[in-house]
Image 1 (tube, rainbow, N blue to C red):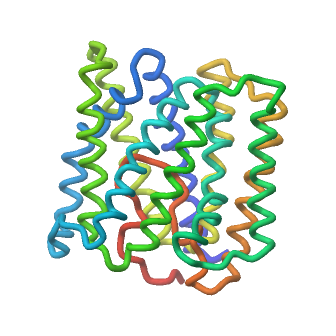
Image 2: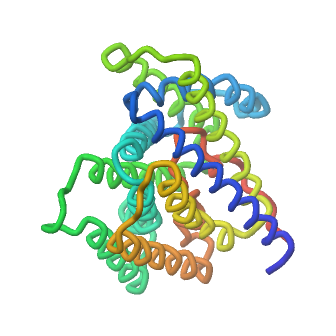
Length: 314
């Protein structure tokens, strides 16, 4: 592994650790506040910093999208991705939520056929099916209760994957400002509209924790950007799975959660399927890499995959 790839992998590991702390803060807040309220205040705290970060893109002026339908669809997906993930973190063990979110590479692979028109070979389809088996292992249909939290986690993965594939479809021709700002505004406005119905008063420490959620999200996003600029995607992308170790550790230490054997086995199957797809795409032509050309971390902040591509490392 080259020095640049090592640097990219280390930056990605640090980004995933901070994302895990972000999710711990979300889970802690979720015990007393609704997902829309957490998202609204996280967006409120991050909005000024994000706008400052968009200043260098003023040459890409214009919020009027070139592909309004796709941009609107992605904005809805971003909002759903965030609110469903935040709800799932509040009601499910961390390790279970991550197991479901790790299906995003599999969903991206499946969606790349109808949305991108890209062929998917039989081996990658088998990997997708194996990943779905992993989901069934975690869910244990007939042996445990299927809760709203499980459905929310799966829905978040689906919405996040759809948003990523849309970027792959229109990213080269769409205005970057439209791709970045419109989902952010949609998130702010949608959660603001719901807020009066779910608002609960917050003490200063709770408001501070809301600011921590926004800060951790932006910090991890920036480290993720740096990691993909430093290293090859095939090296950087699998680093997201390190979040499972953080989930087990934080879950046990902070929330007294111990993942059961089924969750660990199912997560292992899902992770193995995702890593296989990444490895297969590393040997494919550049145009046939829907997963490697996406960022595999669901989030409500602007995505690293909207930035101009960096020069090849090393």
